[in-house]
Image 1 (tube, rainbow, N blue to C red):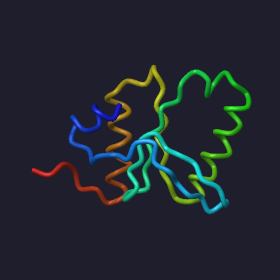
Image 2 (image 1 turned 90 degrees about the vertical axis):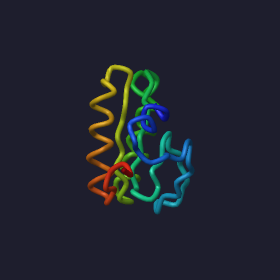
Image 3 (image 1 turned 180 degrees about the horizontal axis):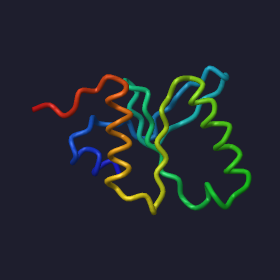
Length: 101
């Protein structure tokens, strides 16, 4: 996913970046666009099938949203073009003006 993001002209994300939450705990994001407070997360099957993982994700995503992060969740069936379109809208909503020309 990171390479596709870069090939399409998006900013370099921080991989597995640590994020300190106001709830008092730390989490990590798959692809973190820290300057824009946008997070691209890849959810594998365990995020859906493991009940404990699912509920940890709910709490984590709620805390991220409360702290002003836009989280884009990507699964194996989401077409790349859709994921990139969602990333584009999120980054632009946070002030990114597009690839340098």
